[in-house]
Image (tube, rainbow, N blue to C red; front, side, top):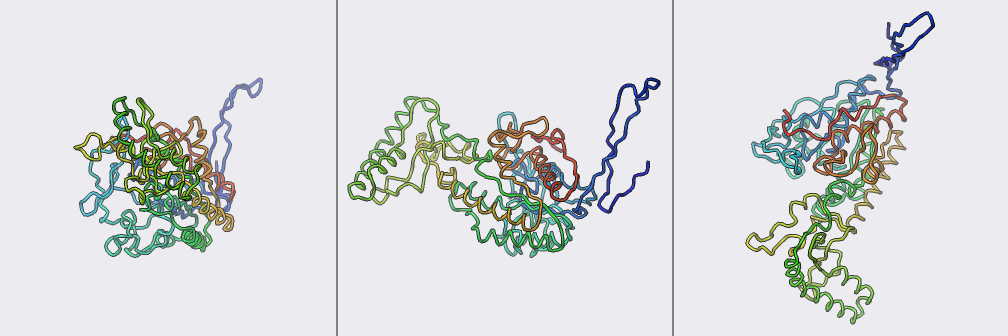
Amino acid sequence: MILRNLNMNIQYKWLLILFVFGFVACESDDDSPVVEEVVITSGTADFSTYVALGNSLTAGFTDGALFIAAQENSMPNILAQQFALAGGGTFTQPLMSDNVGGALLGGTQILSPRFFFNGAGPAVLPATPTTEISAGLSGTFNNMGIPGAKSFHLLANGYGNIAGLPSLANPYFVRMASSPNASVLEDAMAQNPTFFSLWIGNNDVLGYALSGGDGSDPITDTATFDQAYGALVATLTSGGAKGVIANIPDVTSIANFTTVSHNPVPLDAATAGAVNAAYALYNGGIVQAFAGLVMAGAISQEDADAEIARRTISFTAGEGNAVVILDEDLTDLTGLNPNLTNMRQATADDLLVLASASFIGTLADPGNPLSVNGVAIPLADRWVLTPEEQAEIATATTAFNATISAAAQQAGLAFVDANALLVEVASTGIAFDEFLLQGDLVFGGAFSLDGVHPTARGYAFIANKTMEAINATYGSNLPMVKAEDYPTFYSPMLP
């Protein structure tokens, strides 16, 4: 059978074999297969040179690290494999040197190896990375996903110059940049892309969230984001390339912020009594301070009573005691009494970062068994997102997503509502073939062991949603990938 090219976009023809059983006619029992030809086409898109720009979600980051197996299951690589069915060309990635993850700089480890599940919980591989950042890669790379990158970083010259601009340089881009002074966008455009994907902006809010909103990694201001995102889309489409862009998920819905309970502290009766006795002076001081503020007319009695109730610290015997945290949004009473620190017990409205699980219950002073972090010693800001900090993230995410949506409409690009997808994953779970992807850490199937990045199956699901958007926008008919072909865990023994 001769397969003919129907037009310039048709590069591949699928043969779907349908076996038809039964009698065709009373005098024949011929059960030969019926062959139906399915033509895979790119529609109005051109996948011949596909370049992906973004951050760790584009690179394929998983289980707290970047490693070969994860890169091979990255969302862009999955897309490229399907694009190849409709004329897509070679897709190269800056592969790490091993499946350990992590990296070295001058022989010194600067990036940690990947996590793996050892039956009890996530652990770090007891192995040394072999990826040396200073040993730069040659050539061009279609996957320009740079872990840690924010929107404006993709435009920054010197983002790969660890010698000249060490405070700016990103070690992942140092390894793959065409020159020390190149920008990510310049290296992408040098390939003359005919199609691109852009998924950037997550780190513009995620850094703030992962640092507990302590100010060490601030949210990108809206003007900077708008300018950077507009420049990215304008440049990427300047040569006529078509593409697909995705918005920013609500980072407070990811497993990193929904796994650690606000009340994980178990105490026996004697310990609870001792802790309450230690906090009695603080509780009494709070009442006295607010009584003075009410008398001075600085606060109403109603508001004073509400804050006294919020700040009173009390433990009981048994499970379910809330941790003690610092909260800068409480009324500052230290001017009245320097011992009245802005602290309170956490509530269900507070979100503790995943890393706090290994910190709560440790001793601030190894020589003092009473100096328990989260009990006698309040957790610092970096361990928890308060409702006020969550509101800042929500405001920024809404503004950034409005910019992304407007850019997609103005440029006529395919659009993926990653935010809506994550909401569904976090609330009810979302079906992927015969599997249900949920937001629970480890066994939910969507999030890898770092609680931030997807599993391989999660990336495959996002790839399918991306292809659905591409098919709808450009008239292509890219086939979807199957969930069963992508794992939720990587073996500790990956070669």
